[in-house]
Structure formats: C-alpha cells, structure tokens
Length: 92
Image 1 (tube, rainbow, N blue to C red):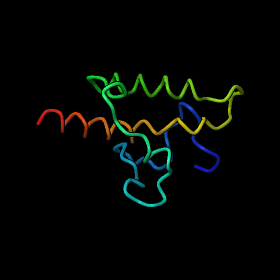
Image 2: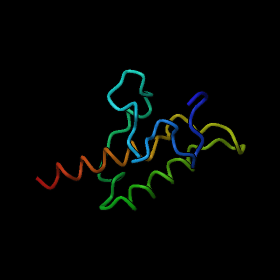
Image 3: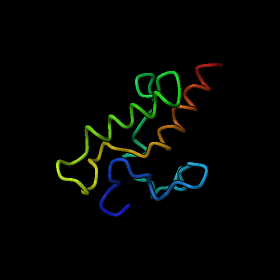
Image 4: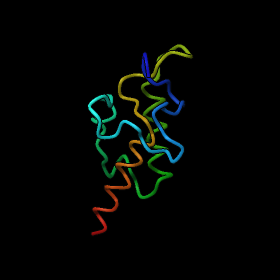
C-alpha cells in the first residue's frame, strides 16, 4: 500500500479468503516477510493472535489520525497464516 497500511485497515493485497496475494513474491513488503510467528504473538488461538496484532497496530500507529501505521504494523492475515503454520508444526 503506498505510504504504508493504516492501523485497523485490512491490507489491499488480501484476497477474499484473507490470504496474501504477495506471499512468496519479491514485491512483498519487508515488514510482512520479516514478521515471524512466535508463541507470544500467536497465543493458543486465532482470537489471541488477532488481539496481539491489534495491540501491535495500536502501539505503532502515528499520533495523528489517518496517517499510515508505523513500519512494525503488519497485515493480520499474513501473521495469522504464519501462526497457523507454526501451530501445525508444533502439533507434529
């Protein structure tokens, strides 16, 4: 998204299923590919992961409304995908 993704706004690169259209492509933003799932971030459910991401976006949002979120804010769906993959690996 030009200028960054505002906090609380879904990324324009998410498809109808919530999957990232840029996943695995070189044009995928570094903030997205750099966000690695962890137990702290993923919690034990999708709801816990989404709460963690909401807090991250709130913590990195600029002071004035309507401005792009800070570089640490990432697409919730991308992180959710990473969390689901991490949970699947831990169950094996």
